[in-house]
Every structure is written in structure tokens, then in C-alpha cells.
Image (cartoon, rainbow, N blue to C red; front, side, top):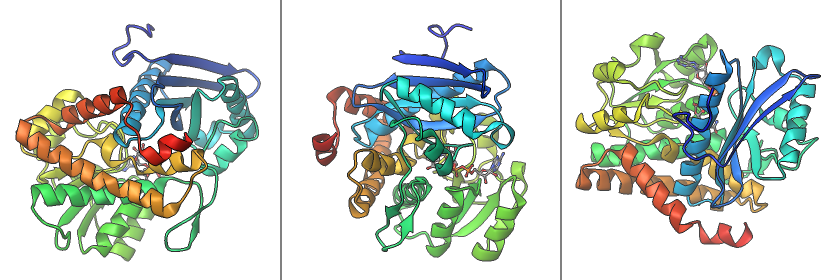
Length: 362
Ligand code: NAD
């Protein structure tokens, strides 16, 4: 397995394979780019079929973090880590502590946070061995409540605002009432997005592999449940992928009735070419790493010791404007939003363009 010739390599600065015999830890830590600051990105635990799949995933996700932070003007680089294993069976405190010791050895070049298959309590165990983990602390929200370090509520808020931006651009509407949104995945982010959409008067069509969340969405939000493969063909205005990556491909795109795709999942498009096809079909696609940046914005403020929920919310609200600008420029210049987002992110990266208030404390 070649790293430097890997199709997803994209000039990564550092890729570490780590293992620990005692705990059974097998992990890969990838640092894509640290031009703007230390690489920050989640630790995913997943039972990858082989090392090659784990490497491909970590490289794609880590590059995505560079673009996500650059686009959100954060003083952070891009990185990600994957632990190979089934989180339900193989995640032990020993394994998490061993992982923490490796993070500590990297000396802060990479900072971990929770991701699929890991949680805030897991991060707290990792933090017993390293300073370089974030998303741990309880936070005061703007309504005076306290919530855990979990970034999902922030991601959900950004995603909801991103949906509104897409509706403003594509459907020329400020309100969501009466629109139908198809949501794929009602987890930590998807369920919250569903709640906000319901409150805004939207109708919901939902699918998930977990019957419990489906029943809850039906009862609490009046959502209509459909089978996994049936979601694409449902009559809907907006499709919101909030489960897995690579769920948008030419085959299911052909079934879509929605004129907007706006959801929280990472790496939604199977290939870059799909982004061009969406543009040709006049489907307004909100690039994943732009619309789902709420979580990284949230943990960035925490990591810098500058958490202020009003300031964080204002920063997340910027996702609406960033997307609106992208959509308008995409139309004006006849370029797919996916391609344009990469261009703008690279421009911001090269100019070292970060938010003034954060640059001062970073
Ligand atoms: P989660 O694990 O809490 O939720 C995922 C949901 O998708 C679960 O309810 C799961 O049952 C469901 N699911 C799994 N396979 C499915 C399938 N084939 N079809 C339909 N549903 C399926 O994860 P999350 O934290 O809500 O994140 C959702 C997505 O958003 C992920 O792609 C994640 O990488 C991305 N994301 C999350 C955050 C965050 O702050 N949590 C930030 C940025 C991006």
C-alpha cells in the first residue's frame, strides 16, 4: 500500500500509524496542513474492512478539515484520526489511554475531538494522557442552559442555517413553512436539524437504520418514515444527508426530486464529478464542509480558551452568508459549488485569512 502515490494523499504533512499490543490499539493519525494552526479534527472509530479503507477515509477526512477550517476562517489546520475497530466491542479505557499517549507524543501538532464511534466521555479518558484533545467541557448556551462539549448542536444550527441559505437562493424564500425536507440519518445532528425544521413549519420525510429514532421523529415531529433506499425518490424540496459519506452518486441523483441538497454528513459526493453533474442539473448543493462547520467553530473557541456562546453563535451564523455568496458566485460564473468551495478555501488558506478576534488569541 503506497502512501505518497495514494489517490487521496494530496501532500499530507504527516501520517502516523500507531499500534499498542497491550490494548489492541490500531490507529492512523493524519495531518494534512498546519499552515493556519494546529491540525484539529475528530477521532473516528470504525470496524474498517482493511487498513487501506482506513487510510483512504482518514486522508479524505483530514484534507476536508483543512478546507473546513480555512473556509470558516479559523486559526486551525486540518487533521483527523481513525481507530480501527468496532466501538461497541473493542473500545476500552486502556485502548483510549494508549491512543492519548500517542497524541501527547505528537506534541500538539494534532488535536483530537469526538467523532463517529467516539464520545465526549471517551475524550475525557483520552485527556487523562494528553493535553491535545478538545470538546470536553460543559458550555453555557445563549438561552442560559448548560450543554456538554459535544459539538453536534452547533453543527445542527449551522446546517439549519445552511438549508435556509439554499432556500433563499434556489427557491427565493425566507421561510421554510410548507416545504418538505427529506432527512437521511437522525443521529446527534440529524435529529436536531429535524427539530429546527419542524419548528420552522417544514414537513419531514425521514429514514434511518435505527427504529427508535424514527418512531421518536414520527411522534414528536410528525415525520413520515420511509425505507432506506426509498428516501431519494420521495417528493421533497430539500434533501438533507445527515448519516454517511458518499451517499450522493449519479444513480440516486437521478431519482431525486429535490432542487436542494443541504445536510451535515462529511464527504457527501461519491466523486468530484458528481458535483459538476449536480450543477448541470441545477440542483443547489451546499458543500458539506461549509454547511457542517458549526461543530469545528464551536470546538475552536473551546480549544483557544475563548468560549463565549454569543460569539460562537455569531460565527456559526456566518455560514448562511458564506453559502449565499458561494451560491450566487456559482450561478454567476457557472461553476459547481463543490469546485468553487475548494477554490475559495484554498484562497483563504493561502492568504492566511482567519477571524481577527481568534487570530489574536491563537
Ligand atoms: P450519529 O452517529 O449520531 O448519527 C448518524 C445517524 O445516521 C444515526 O442515527 C444512524 O443510525 C444513521 N444511519 C447510519 N447508517 C445509515 C443509513 N445507511 N441510512 C440512514 N441512516 C443511517 O452522527 P452525527 O454526529 O449525527 O453525524 C452525522 C454526520 O454528520 C456524519 O457524517 C458526521 O461525520 C457529520 N458531521 C457531524 C458533526 C458533529 O458535530 N457531530 C460535525 C461535522 C460533520
